[in-house]
Length: 262
Ligand code: 1HE
Image (cartoon, rainbow, N blue to C red; front, side):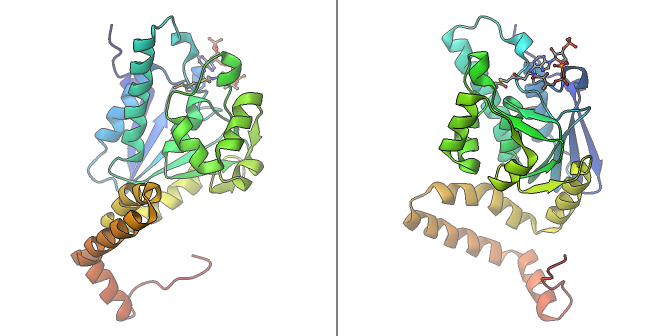
């Protein structure tokens, strides 16, 4: 039977302009069942219209324990491909959706949980967060786009090490190697993620769109093509009325300056 979205496993609430998407299977450490993956896709495809940024977080002691291993049954190769493609579509809805997404990470961020975090645009880890790719010890491979996204953050060598040895990367190291952009004290990841998301929500939507949809593509293009795409995107963004209004406000001394403590 085809899996159905488990809409109880995700809660989406609006905090001002920020959609807060919470994984809600704490008894199973927010393990990603097929129903939860489908609900994640549905949630990001139907975010409230007022949302201009989103935060993803996990209920309970951990962000996410990865693939729900209890659902890992005998699959033939074709079913395995389709299952992985279902994850790809869902995480694509996170990464290339309508609004930028900040992940608030605590406790275990492992396997598919790390794949989900990698699909977000910014990652904030608190001191309790730890990261691992235990697929090797489970006899499987990443299937939720981790092999594409994680090396872009930390490089192929570090990901290979994590998968070959199963070693756990703590919050300190995660920040140092670029797995996360922010590190905060225990219990503060959600507050920090919300503060960042509110700032993001203040940007012109077209700038956020360019960062989500143009920048990753430009980064993968040959530099000559990338520069041309950049020029097109820059011209489109500059021509928007909102950009004109923002530039005018700055030139009239009515807009915030760049400040180190802001
Ligand atoms: C689970 C899962 C799960 C917990 N699938 N049920 N992921 C992993 O290999 C990680 C496996 N999980 C763990 O190592 C630990 O559970 C944690 C470090 C995340 C948390 O430890 P702890 O002590 O807080 O919790 P726990 O007692 O181990 O788990 C509580 C319950 O959640 C328990 O069920 P219960 O019925 O005995 O209460 C666990 O069985 C259950 N649980 N994690 C199913 N993952 C697209 S490909 C992606 C490939 C992967 O993600 S592979 C990595 C899978």
